[in-house]
Image (cartoon, rainbow, N blue to C red; front, side):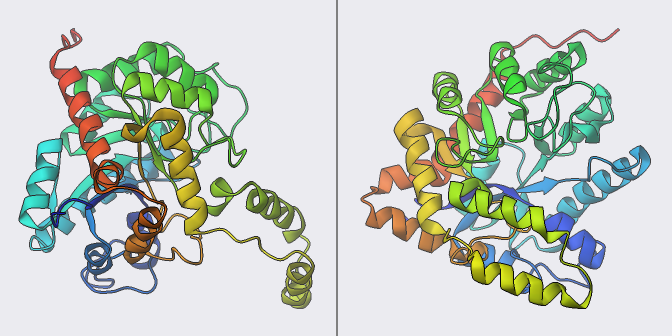
Length: 368
């Protein structure tokens, strides 16, 4: 087994937005090259956790003013460039599968970017192209709300999947060689993209709906389509997506939480938790989703997309330096070195390379 065999490509991490909230993306205030206990993520713990490449989520709330959306989107893109320029001994910008492998060989973390919401292109193909030119390599078509051109998994029906602009967005992403992230999309949107796109289907941070009935998770039928397209589902660590018992407990807690007010709120919460203890959810459940996706779609179609710094993680998977414990559980379950290499990075590199190749083979859209 080589030192690079199990390097992890993590498909989704929200450190940038958390850093923006705490320190305004000022690395002098909150240094990502030092351990930062306010965060799940820093470059030190990524290295310790065996992460060889990180997709940094570029996210702005979908209800933000358009001017604020643009400013905050560009600020985070700039922060990734600055991260690589400030700490070149630790990380480097990656724009391709070849760049990822080069970073692996150099011992540096490959920094990639994913735009987490189509609302951030402001209905503009030129903004989409500019972000790709700036290094963004996937876009999640929706976040928690519909866009004007695509339906979200957690909003009501809108355009019925994609409208004509949505189809043009997908076609443009195919031409660019940009991964089309379906993790927040409605089933109708996923099915529409599967019919329209000739690139591999890609989910940056989702689980298996057979194990937790959350609309953000992927059905077994979708997993069949992922396999047919040579795509990938990168498994998220968010407890509500991992355990049906936990999902129902969390929904019950949210339904009564607004009644916990005033000086008695803490006592009310303590009493409720005593009667309704939090169900266990952790590495075991993450591995269950990984293995379900493997069993349905095949070993070549599963990866890891944690969502660190964008959620409350499982107790035994509290930060990015815990990835070795996850791989240890899979090894205990009998996973071989080639299987672990496929899960941790091989599958994603293939999907990215296939997406790049698909773009090269297409004739660019004429722009008059």
